[in-house]
Amino acid sequence: MSVLVVGALGAAAGPFAWNAILRHTGGDFFVDAAVSVFPISLQDTGSGVFAFALSALLLGLGPLRAASGQRLVLASAVCGVAALLVDIYLY
Image (cartoon, rainbow, N blue to C red; front, side, top):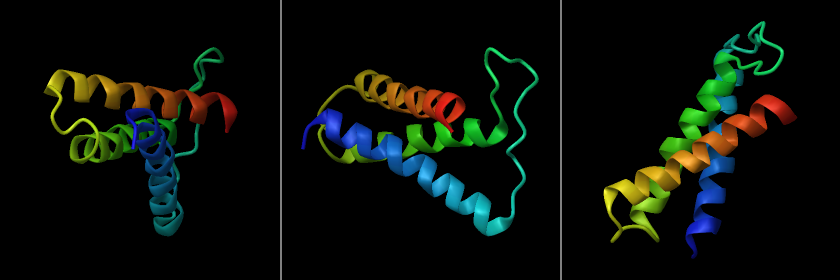
């Protein structure tokens, strides 16, 4: 599998897992910040963190297992930021 496919899978599955946890526990993190340009919430932040972590795991065990740590973290960070921005502006 290519880096792009595995990264996209991690960026999609991470927020899904985070939202499942929030719904199961009844967490109330869906309050956006008062800044209209960047209305981030704790739920959005968690989505980015989970996307980063799951992408790092999948990419590190998969297509980037022989790559440097810097490349793995950079690719995972791109996945996390992409998931964060999608969660803020599209959901």
